[in-house]
Length: 79
Image (tube, rainbow, N blue to C red; front, top):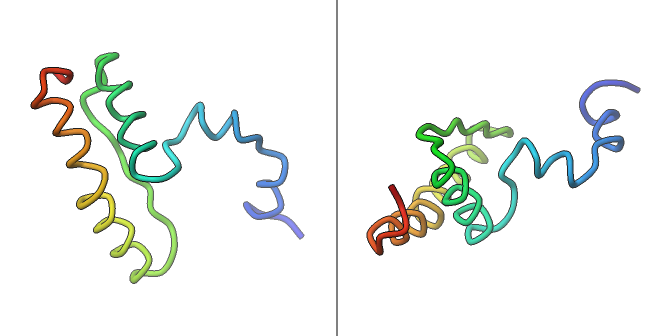
């Protein structure tokens, strides 16, 4: 009847994009590079779900997203 799931239908994709990084690995890496180039030096991950879901998502982030952000920095595009 209430709660986060009920409220979620009122949140637009644009609003989510303004406050979160959500998407495939390439999109997430692109957004992280963009905010890093704006001077952001720390990132907080909020991962929801079961412990197994959290472990899987964090592993994917470490294996698929971080290397893409590091490649950009190594190529001279990062700070």
